[in-house]
Image 1 (cartoon, rainbow, N blue to C red):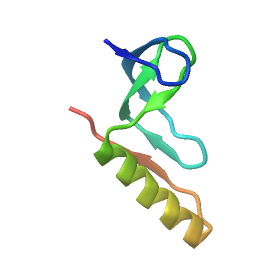
Image 2: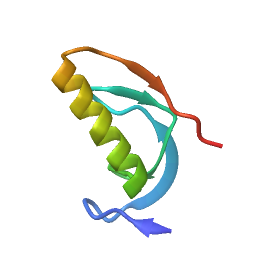
Image 3: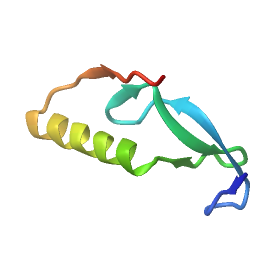
Length: 68
């Protein structure tokens, strides 16, 4: 099991919502002690691109992400 860099707690995989832009169904690893979220590179890049687009367009979107 991975250890949280913020508090030293255990990290587990969960499905979460991202603040600011709601992106449902994102698979991340989460510290069981402090709740810190760890995105893999692909998910982090996707969320950054969506957030940048929404901020540029000044609009809000709800995006469902399929995770098999």
